[in-house]
Image 1 (cartoon, helix red, strand yellow):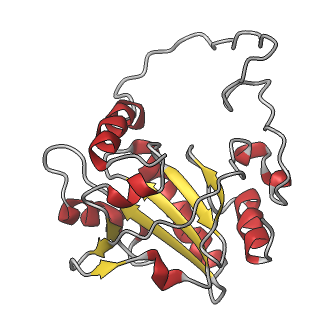
Image 2 (spheres, rainbow, N blue to C red):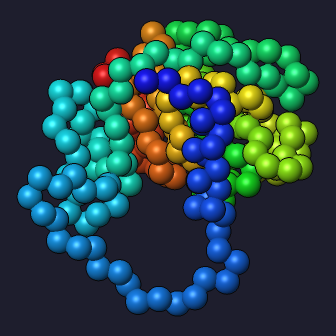
Length: 219
C-alpha cells in the first residue's frame, strides 16, 4: 500500500495537534490503562504491551525506550527526490553502502524538534563509519517554507547534520508512514530493517546499539 501525497497530507494534519505541546497543561490524575482482553492487540504505550513474534535478528532491541520498534517492515528506501537548502535535488541513492537513518520531521512538531539534537549526537557517535543520519523535513500550513524550516533546523543542530526538505510530501508518502516523528533505518543494501514512529533519544545506549547492530549486518 502506498499513500498518495494528498492523502498523506490529510493524514499528517491529524498529527499536528498531537505534535504541538500544550501551552498550559492542566494537572490530571494518572490514567490507568484498561486491562487487556484476550485477542486484543495493545498499543505499544500500554503497560502490558509485548512486541509481536519475529524472526528478525534485531528483535532483542525492542525493549526499554525502543519497545515500539517495528523490525518486520519489508520496504526498500524511497527513490523519490528531495532538495537541500539551495534547492538542489538529492536521493537516498547517494547513501548506498551506508546504514541510513532517515528521520521525518516538521518544524511545528514539538516531539520532532525535541529529538533532533539527539540525532545529531547519534551521527557524531558514528563519525568515520558507514552511517548516515538524514533528517528530511516538509512544510505544512501557512508560513511554513523551506527557508523557515532551515532556520529552525540550524537552531537545533547547527551544521552537524545535512538539511533536506520534502515540500511535496512525496518521499514521506513513499516511505508509507503518516507518523511524526518517524525514524526509519535501512541497511547498506537499502532495505528497511527497523522503524520507530514515536520520539526517542537517538544517542541513548539502546539506540546506538541498534544502529551498530545494523552496521554489523544484522537484520
